[in-house]
Length: 275
Image 1 (cartoon, rainbow, N blue to C red):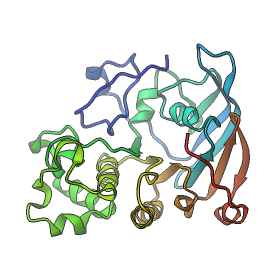
Image 2 (cartoon, rainbow, N blue to C red):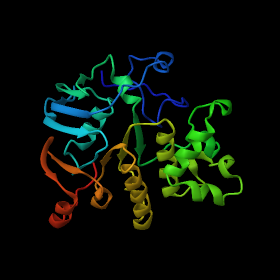
Image 3 (cartoon, rainbow, N blue to C red):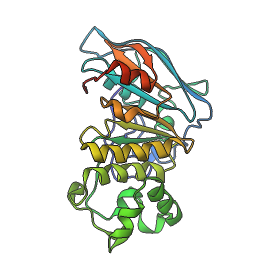
Image 4 (cartoon, one colour):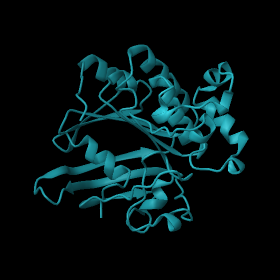
């Protein structure tokens, strides 16, 4: 039930965001994106892996209002990664329920919810193609909406980089984005999410491999997105990434141990370690 179907080169997916295995590729393309107008609610979520009787998540409950920016921190083994995978519907909770605007998520609508998510990972997948192809991921050139493409580039704060390159959007990025810096890779991932008009942006350790100055630049981009009525979820071990968060949840031993504001995190000098 928690397995994922590995699919690439399709316009409705963000990098490694995959539909659940009960939705073949052909069917997934026609699935309508689940509407999100008010809140996401996790209610008493528990999760146990089949080969381990111990609960990795225990009675996890929280709400995210549309337009909020929420952070999750936690040390290795806290359950942070498992919670992320439940959010993405890679895994299905063994206890409790997840609701979107009062609608319970299950196998009938998990894929619809996935299509509302823009997923930006630490290692953004870049194919050996042009910048245009990597942002409008999987689309044929004739299918690309140039207006949406330029807006995504602007909102991802990638425009200066594009304008400085002689080939602009037709620049070749090389195998696995070898011609890009770490920060540029992250912005391509952000632009990809914005091109599909994802209403929920999930950043998974998006700055953990970046140097301090590049991290600050990506945080500036995330802060810019937070003002655009996007709902943003940040999973990180770098406290400095969480400046714009409305709330920050700390996971310990599979439960939400504390809820913080950013200034409280700094005062307590909490420095969790990435899972």
